[in-house]
Image (cartoon, rainbow, N blue to C red; front, side, top):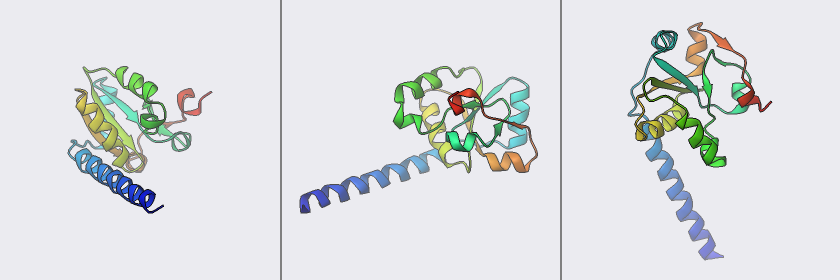
Length: 143
């Protein structure tokens, strides 16, 4: 039993180190303000990607944003990779979540794959700025 506890402790430690590494790496992404993001989106120079979970997206999202929940990265990696492959490489990819942490993780993955990506931060910042939102699409609600 002691060996199992030791293995669990090592696994948990490695898991937390990986999360911290991801968070630190994610913070290296350039950021963009909601108003600048809206301008690029309207000019068709950027794609806005929502990485929040389905339950969060159902309460509303940035108008016109593409939904790619972060949980797909582990629960359905094939679908996650396919969704990323559909993103155009000739436009900026602006990722957001609730606060900016999860968008940093996905943004780092996109950056690794050669995308020009910026962290838009959190949906709450967008709402506070009074910028356009809409209801979730069928992707998020699985209709």
